[in-house]
Length: 70
Image (tube, rainbow, N blue to C red):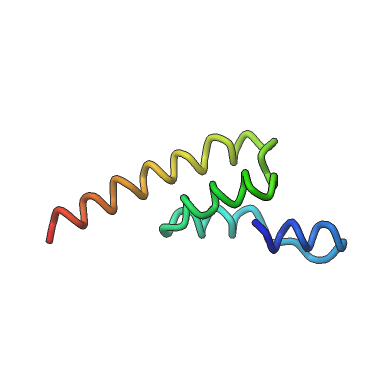
């Protein structure tokens, strides 16, 4: 989020939304959510306001499952 925000200010090539969602999906949803609100970036996009918390929930469920499986 921070890098994408910096790139947007300097009119450079942006980080795709697909990449941001992929990072959240593979376990970084909490970091993406925190960065999203601390940097005030992508907070107006409904897909991010709904999608990232859902991915955070999915991350938590999967972490719990794998933790309990051991």
